Structures are given as C-alpha cells and as structure tokens.
Image 1 (spheres, rainbow, N blue to C red):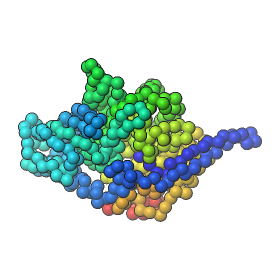
Image 2: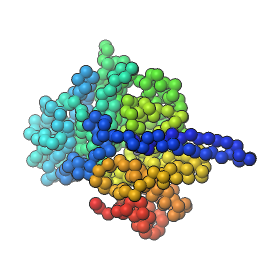
Image 3: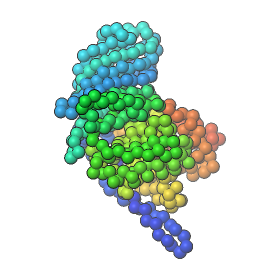
Image 4: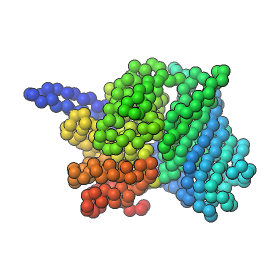
Length: 461
Ligand SMILES: [Zn+2]
C-alpha cells in the first residue's frame, strides 16, 4: 500500500554536451494525509495492541486451505448477503477461532455438514470441542461492512471496492484475518448484468440470466486475507497479453484515455522488475489495476491493484503504480507472518521504485530516488510500532536497508534477493529469515547493517 508522501515525478531529459542526462524531480505533494478520516478504516492509527487482540493465539493453530464465497451486494442498504465455506486444517486439540465482523447476522452455520454451536463475540467466531482436524465451515450471513469493503457513488453510478489492509478483511467475510495464513480464494458475485465484477485471479465463469449475472473468480495462487479483492461497478476495460501475462486496466469511463499509459507503465515495471528480481509471480492469474474513489493512493490487492482516481495517471503517478506492482514480489508472493515486519514488504516495494528509475534513467535516477527516501527519513522505530503501522518511516527505512545492503556488496545483493524471493514465494517470512538468508550470500554477520535501519534488529518484540 502506498498512502503518504505521494510524489509527482517529472522526468526531464535534456541533451547536455553529447550525453543525455535524465534528471528526476520529486515534489512532495502532500505528506500529511489524515487517514483516520476514511470512515472507520483507521489504517494509519491501527495499533499493535489492536492487531494482537484481533488475532488470538488459537488462530495460529489453524491453516485455511481455501475459501469459497457467494455474494449478493445490496447497493441501497450498503450490505452484502454471503454464503461462505471455509476449508481448513487445525491441530487436534485446538479451539477453532476465526474473524468476522460483529455486525454480521449469521443465519446458518455448520461444520462438516452438521449444525454446530458457535460463539460470535468481539468479531471472532469460536467453535469448541471439534475433534476433526479437517473442517469445512459453512456460514450464511448478512453484513453491513464498516471496514474492508466500501460502497461509493460517483457520476458513473454505484461502486464497491475492498481495502482490507491490515485487519479489515473480516469486516466483510469470515476468515483467519492474519497475513500468515494464505488460502485459495474463489468468489461468485451476483449483480446487474451491466456491472463489472473484478476479484483475485481469473474470471472462470460468467452466467447471465435476464438482467442479472453471476461472475465467478478464482485465484491460482494462495492469497492472504488482507489482499483479497472485490470490485463492482461500471468500468471500461483495456486488456493486453504481454510476455504471457494478461494485463487489465479497469477505469471509470471518462478516464479511459489514460488507461493506455497506465498499461504501458504496468508492463514496463513488470519487465524491469523481472530483470532485476524474478519472474512475475502471478503469471497464471493476471495483473490488473482498478480505478476507485479512494482518495489516498493505491493498495496492492493481489493481481487486482486498487488505484484511487486522483492517482490514475501514468503521467504523474508512475511511482505509485510501480510501488503497488512491486508488492507482487514483496508482500503478495513473499509475505510477512506478522504486521511487526511490514517494513520488509513496504521497504522492498519502495526500494523497487528506485530500481525502476535506475532502469529508466541510470545511476542518477536511482540516486535521486534513494535521496528522496533519505530526505523523508525520520529517526523513529521501524519494527513493532505501537501505533501508526504505516508511518512513512517504515517505507523509507526499509528501502534504505535494501540500499545499504546493495552498497555493502553490489555483487551479492541481487543474487541474495533473488534467492530469497524464489525460496519463499507464496509463503511468509519474518525479519530473522530475511537476515539469515542474506547473511548466507554475504558470508558475514549483517547485524549492524540491519540495526542501523531497524533500531531493534530482528529480535522478537
Ligand atoms: Zn506499499
């Protein structure tokens, strides 16, 4: 996700003597967006205690394999009706605990086909005394999401978009709402046939009956709850297959002429990051960008990136687009086990902005980007922040750690990063794993390098 310190980048290329120099100017547009005013989604003000309270210890003992959900949105009431099945494994003795908004009225509940008693308390569903270790939990409910899923309206009609990060997926569907538990996600959404539905992965089925349709989407790769995507609305779509990957740009109709530039930036960012890192991790799915009414930047919903209308421009907001695409590697493929290490995925994605400018404008482009990170840097804690999980310092200190590692050893940096991304693709890691894997390639202890940026090092906090 990229929400603060939005920069306009003007690339001025001039011929000076016989050489061409690309000069990059970053202008800090507005570093002080107050995220706490987006309804109840207080991204910036989420505290560590709230997250710990949200993920109970029992939730670490379950492993969700897949979620299938049928959704009927009610635009008038701003509610959804859902029929959901969660397939999971758990350790035999463990209590089964999941997350679901307290607003949800649950009308049916069964486990492995049997009606089962449960508690729905403090946005948790608790089921005691289940002997089976493989469970299919089926729920029917109606929920008016106060976080995670948003109903908006503009000149093009009514829209829905999801923004679950960090712990708001359970604002609209039942899940193990922690980044450590990835699952395959399939959703069928029933809407007016004129509306477009977009979710993770591919649309595998579209059934039209009269003026209604059911659009079914499935992810070919596991997804963390915070990256689950759902969009509905009146969209124009531009699509193109490039190097084996389907690209989609879903825009509001009046912004259709900007889609081509967005698509070009997407494909050039993927090409550059594939050269520097590894193959685009979700090639069997797709890469989509979806324009929404969110006014604060973009979010990396897996294979269906959300981009606020103000930022839907390849002319001015290349770095936002590149940042969200870079999360395909840092965050979506290799995820973090807990939000204490959000610096690793935000730092990695932010660092990729510098790699992009390096490919476009050489060393000057790279150094201009890294210098802009240095200028934004504040001497604040990076890991396990008590509040303001997504403070800008998390992004820039994280990015500067990658720059420090590269400056330690230019030869070892990219092989180490490639190995890390390949070894842990579709899995989750923590600070220690990243440090140990990097140290193997560098052949030395990197504690002082990590401590310089992270202050606390990689200790459990
Ligand atoms: Zn981000």
